[in-house]
Length: 86
Image (cartoon, rainbow, N blue to C red; front, side, top):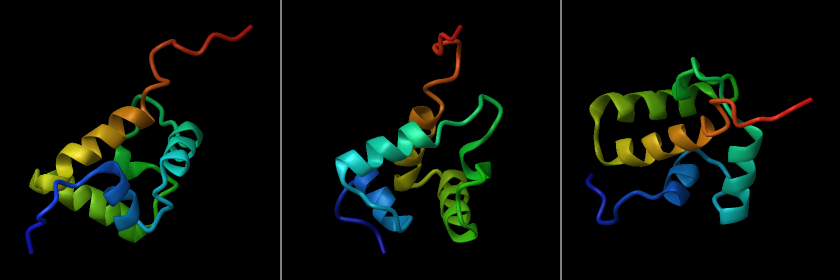
């Protein structure tokens, strides 16, 4: 069945069974940053069902792919020398 509504990050989080409020999504993204070489669907924090959803829709390049790509970018945003320590 096709969606009448363009998928959003909130809808994606609902599909994945996660809390989908703006603050919950922001917190999830802050707490689940991925290393540069880790693909989104390979992240260790997904369940098998979540991983399958992300991977299958990414591969199909369907209406979810844009939102999944957005989440992927946000989970990799700390990569690239932005963390200054010491």
